[in-house]
Amino acid sequence: MSWPMTCLGEVASLERKSLLPEEIETGTSYLGLEHIESGGRILGYQRVGAGELQSNKFIFDPGTLLYGKLRPYLAKICIPDREGCCSTDILPIRPSQKLDISYLKHVLLWRPYVDKANSLCSGANLPRISPSSLLGIEIPLPPLEEQRRIAAILDKTAELSGANRRRQDLLRAFPLSVYRQMFGDPRHNPFLWPVFRLGEICLNEDARRVPVKSSDRKAMQGRFPYYGASGVIDHVDDYLFNGQKLLVGEDGANLIARSSPIAFIADGKYWVNNHAHVLSENGKAKLRFLEYYFALVDLKPFVTGSAQPKLTRSALDSLPVPLPPLGLQERFESVLTALEARLAQAEISAQQASSLSCALRYASFQGDAG
Image 1 (cartoon, rainbow, N blue to C red):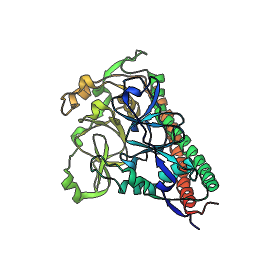
Image 2: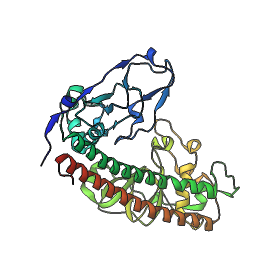
Image 3: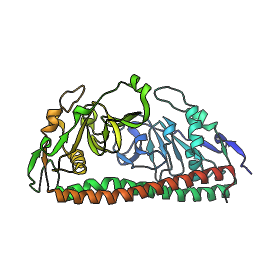
Image 4: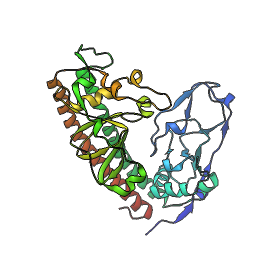
């Protein structure tokens, strides 16, 4: 059995009630696309003051579903729990009495409907779905009580997925907290560890790096990771390094922006180009300790170039490192090993929850949920 299909516009309407900037009162809750996470979680409302917003906004309330029409593949779809105003790139949708709002959210978050909305977009650089195209999408429409039952089931799976995601986030953030507790912030060295230059406490293997142009890599595709400044950028059929090394970005905006880790562990067999420094142990410092040192240290005084920031070999070697005893570094490594085992288990749980959610959505919207 499958449910009858109905155009969204037949069971819901858009509520594009505009709020002029001068009408916005101090303390109004505001939502932009940046405040909504992919998948529907609201990261937080922005409290705005009179005159703070410079353009018209749409009004919303808890009875409306908010649909991000810009880049709909991001699936920024949520149900607010209060009144407020939102960006005009967010469409407030009011379900009729025939449509449960939570059920509608789950339908529109289902991957086939995210892909459908994306296919209806116009604009190459900033794709948007038009209100008429969105309302023209057909959705499955079971009886209202069945919609509510389906929504309740999917709400539970969403809660499970959210709990798993939060657990993963906490586990990923925990090592830095442990590092600070055990060693202090390296920028201030509160425990007064002896300070060494980085070049004194590890080996630099940059001389073994070999860059390969992307056009040449096409002829040597294989199973070995090919690393650049921020991680794996390709796979090739040969390797230069075997075993654990610490790779540190040599150039690029990320040295300043820190949008991704600038130092990371590589292990196994792999190739490294000339955009990442390669460090190995010499018996004085553990690589995992140095990995988190780089997560906290301020590199700006050591980076040259503005258009293309660069951390030269000499600058890297001169970095001051407060160095605790090797035994304490090894204890930190043991903590990391235990945390990574828990994170691996959390990732398995997250994958299982995601698979369950996908199966339940498919069964529910096809009319096969038990």
